[in-house]
Length: 322
Image (cartoon, rainbow, N blue to C red):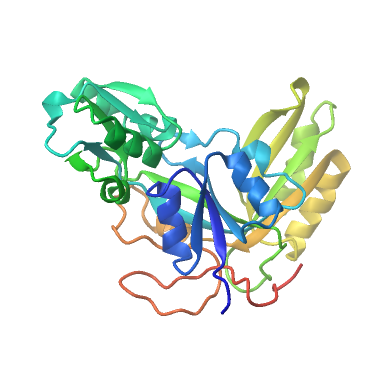
């Protein structure tokens, strides 16, 4: 009997990362780890086959520290997934909103519900993750404490939803990256692609301007550019970037060639763009996402059941290119 493949996520069972794993890889065993660093280590040590890691949220912004973990040399991005986040205010069975004094959850979840918590007059208390906060509330048995977590967490820990969909913004969505130790690069021509890379500019005047010039002149669309400090030095800056296209495209290849004159860089992954991106282009104003999420990466050819067909990186076939 073939052992089930495993995918790592940060948090406890019932976390949004757990939901993302179940959406994209329902036939994998989802394995929880307390920290992001432990997820990456499990992947590198081949204790798991993949990892599902959140990188940014449409309301609260970048997930802390992920940009520092992504450049690990044996880790590669093979796909992305956008999960609509619906936060529930969870309390003990029988508790009411009037009983609640403090709300416990991950800092990202608290930030995404800031206005709602203020309106209810509740004190926010940070926790390691959303599902872990729900478990702690259930174990504590204190009706004055509540958690912000998912409906899956409510079911897992026997809690009651006191206020549904507490998130401040209807568009509240988290982008996840799917990681592997295999460099499964999507081939050019199979559809819209995203290339993610990191680069560190040399400490010279106009280095960043010159480094990015090839992307501008080649008409390559850069959809993400973030800077962060490296090694505690204020004079050295590393950047994390996403572009549309593949290094196999002539314009992209030329842009990377020009980049190499001014910066050290490494490509972290080339993968199929989620169809969520195209939906956003067609919807200029933020709208509430459907309850059934649209799934990510590339071809698995499995039937659609109550949602869009699942396109995901397949580990049981050779990569399009390496």
